[in-house]
Length: 276
Image (cartoon, rainbow, N blue to C red; front, side, top):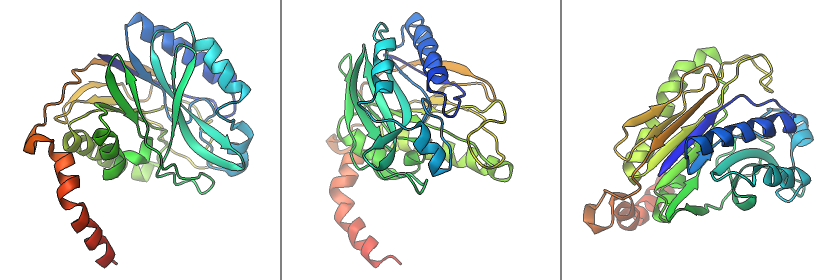
């Protein structure tokens, strides 16, 4: 299967401009015969860090904006993952939509959302394209063991991780190193392909209230943690990789991740009760 990611800059609050970029990205994906392609976190709305700005651009999963998204992308062959600030009643969620041929296959909402105005998602759906199951985690979700493990235990062979990174200069190198280490761990411990699909910030209109760097660095990791494709930094880019979705981890007849969950989860819960 061929998978990809569009590393792009979004414009906060400009749905139509961001949708135009999705359409262009899908044109490229179809040209390259990509089966599943991702776009960055909150790409359709931008990712402001103030609640009033987030609410102004947010929309519901059954909104006119989503209907327009489905209509304009119905002609493309690629299945795609794209993020937005979702209005769900009075609540806001950081959500990724999974779309194919004009149909909304489902959504995933970030389970480690750290913006105080975002609710936490607690559902972990798995999707399928051409017989291959895949799932989605969003940005910081990939820094925790459980979300990717849950998807892998549900049969996902590929995990897409849309990001919106805009990092203050003092923490930039630490962030760069830690994120890569987290993602290598998720790929190896679960025997999955892991796609870090980042954004990029080229100008001063990040939508955030501090100075930072949106550096990009999107990549595809194989189940051994090897980087098989990587974007260029500090520019819009498109990456793709041909992946073999067959599982290779046969430890204990079930794979290390499932064996670990079965054998050690009660001990983990006991240790958690004792932890301070």
